[in-house]
Length: 299
Image (cartoon, rainbow, N blue to C red; front, side, top):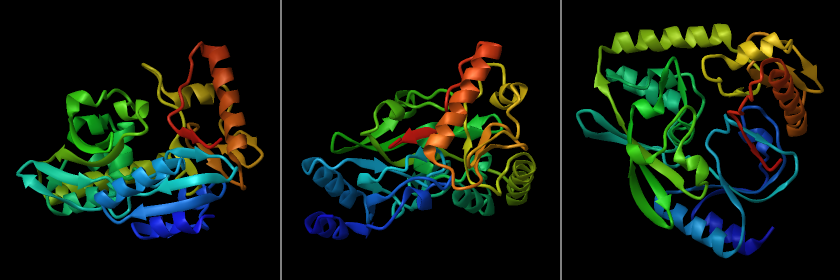
């Protein structure tokens, strides 16, 4: 632990030196983090990134940790959370400016109360808007690519607005996955006017469906695999006999087999061993290569 590094980071954001990935990921696994920092604003973020590069300190941008599996080894680097980038406002009648640290459920509910439609599909996704933009997250046949018009990115030490046609959007995919050094800072999304009660009823219905079909009461990283074309990952996993499968502290959900649960202090290695076995069986039985939807880090 360097006093100089800690002093610099502390002057530009909130810093912790006692954090673990286990505390800040939804699946609740992972080792110690040397520095966990939340920059005070975008300009402070640029200074922190420049400093980390100059000091050759590895870093990782992390939202709410809802789509990532982190290893048990200590991470001798800096994890950056954009908690302070939490502003949103109208730019015109149908365009909302939203910073990357705003959580999707919070924004969806605020929009509903103001009679603004567009983000209902994301009301149950426990991530930040930056993470949703990164993954082109979606549900109920809607995704971020349906509402995003532009994204503000820290790219090569400059703030750049990228248009939708530059984002490489496809199913659970964006250009940002190929450029981890580009940092999503904010986005512009399209909204439409609708009666507040109509939006709230739709959100309530979808949350009810989510609770009925997904194991939300246990730690997970959400859907583990992307759906292959014209099929569902959960169906393939189920057909291979994995519903309810246990390995060490890992369990394949009986409610939704595409959810891999941490039920008893599981590790990333337990998760990887289980998912590798699932992929092997699905490939053998159906000739389909399942693609991970979750990200592996420091594993």
